[in-house]
Amino acid sequence: MKYSGFTLKPHEEVLEIIHTSLIPSAPRFILFIIWLLIPFFFLFPLFREGVGGALVFFGLLISGMILFFRQYTRWSGTVLILTDKRVVDIEQRGFFDRVVTEATYEQIDEASYRIKGFLATVFRYGTIRLLLNGSSADIEFARIFRPSRVHNLINDLREENRVMM
Image 1: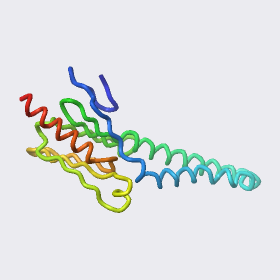
Image 2 (image 1 turned 90 degrees about the vertical axis):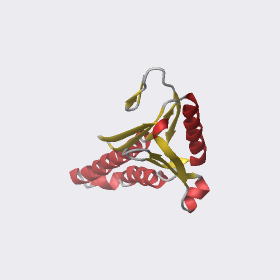
Image 3 (image 1 turned 60 degrees about the vertical axis):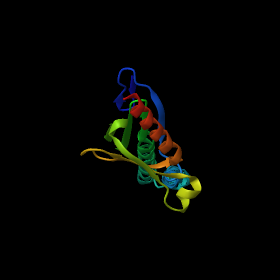
Image 4 (image 1 turned 90 degrees about the horizontal axis):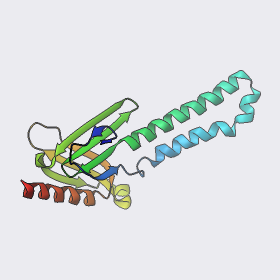
């Protein structure tokens, strides 16, 4: 079975798909929505100017749509997937830029989380960090809602995998 950028192994089950919190991205989404709406407030004055005004109108509208879609693609494509056998971090950095990092629970030496700042404390989002053994790159997933719950789930899955071995 295929899930947004990676394929499940035989007898593997997805337990949870975790997106980043919308709260830290809200200012950008609001800015791009305003960017989309502003040309409509100046619709008649811009079209009175003729071809130049129409070009400005459509230029603002199209650029706003592209920026909004890019931000939405980055938010929706960045996920942390927990299966019964491994952790998969998919980071969407742009339209054509995706980084996929995966680790089995046996590879995880330490799991920790951090909530830093006033807004992060109020809205309960933070960063999960998984330290991997060997020369593997560590997995860091930022702006996750209720990181303590995800941290506990990862630690429980690590314990289950240790017992199975």
